[in-house]
Amino acid sequence: MAARFTTSGELFTGTQKVYNTENDSLYMKYYFKDGIETKVIHYKKDGDINKLIKGRYLNKLIVKEIYTNGVLLYQNVPPTESEDGIGHLRGWHENGQLSVETTYTGDQVRQGLLIEYDEEGNIITQERYEDGKLVETIK
Image (cartoon, rainbow, N blue to C red; front, side, top):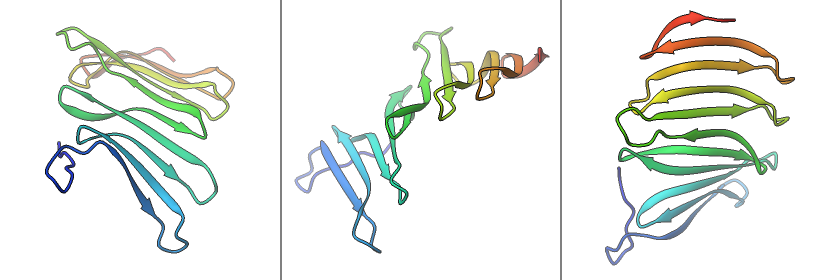
């Protein structure tokens, strides 16, 4: 994982802005704390704003949350750093309805149920995994 430093060699805390060269508009804004990128805001041409909240898990930089115009569309809750910890991934449709949820172990191996939903909340797919392998299709 690369760290950002100031010109004086200290770990950088602050923001970095990237501008679109076509129209000089703000394109992306990066946030850093102690040299590590913690958040990115992406400004799209259509006015939508995507915000990525990052964090660290097992010394890896991961995306923990994604928002578009303030609406949560993705969430990654890493497992506890214990041997048997379980993490959760969730995604939402733009209408706020849960789209998908699954669980995984610390080494990012799917474990337990994977459920996909349509925009009305009806279950489309439901599968059960053990150690990353599909063992049962429920729906």
